[in-house]
Image (cartoon, rainbow, N blue to C red; front, side, top):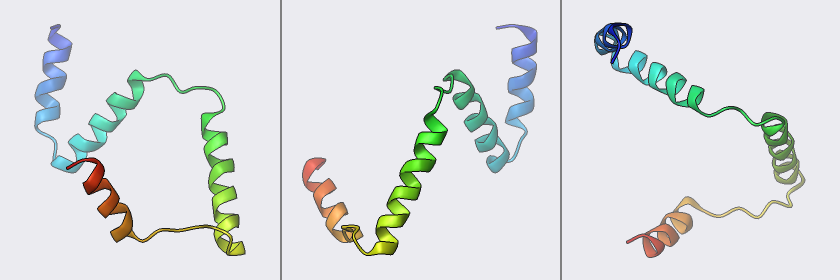
Length: 75
């Protein structure tokens, strides 16, 4: 590795846990180029789901039900 990378790793190791988590998130997300329109598509989907909830037409499930299903699928 380059001297710069080694220096950055050393400096990163001195950060607090929340700071390292923030840095890790930044680095990981910087590896994947953002696809055009994804953020807007999520905003649209969130708005649609919120509207369903407010209209009373959303079909929700309890956390217990979801967790039980996950335990069956992934023992």
